[in-house]
Length: 125
Length: 108
Image (cartoon, rainbow over all chains, first blue to last red; front, side, top):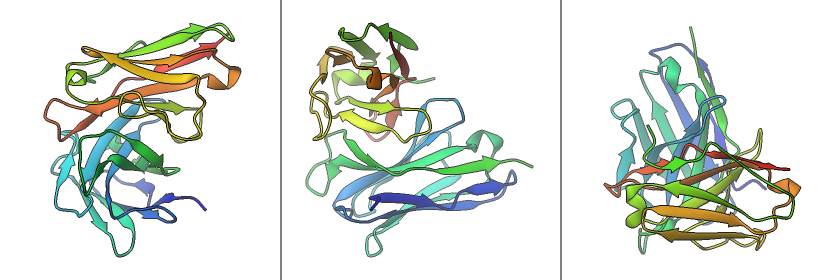
């Protein structure tokens, strides 16, 4: 059983929207912050966004601010990434990751301990 | 540009020790994490909170930090350690995270 499974990727035209999902199973989900991280083809990892364990705090990278929004549904063990006004430079594999270092108790650590397998987003006309 | 700086490439002879470094001002305040990524695979955490090794990660991997530099050391590198390695940490705001540009490790 794969703990985190992303879905929703695909090919989309510039300016359009896409919603990614990351479903968790077999792991503690609702007590930890969740991140989205992306990787353009042949490039390094880029942090995209984070949401706190209860959804009350959300932050995103400057490169996606105002266009992407992160949310979660703890009743469904799922975190989402709504991507609007997509650009060619958003083309990447998008990973979700759990942060064991940021929980309902404290958020001083840094431990992206579990990652999904990724979902590919291609923005092209 | 990344706020965490890594050497693009490092090589090590089989069985020898190699240190991969990550520099950034935020490392004076926040913990570093280290990830191994092999071609076509998702990243895997090898060190978190600067020097903690997750269960299942070989004990030849260790982490340390001094000032603005975090280090990942592989003691007795194996062929299977050949991969890209990324560090990460929070940025100076504490509410955003950043990754280093990655280091490609070649085991000779």
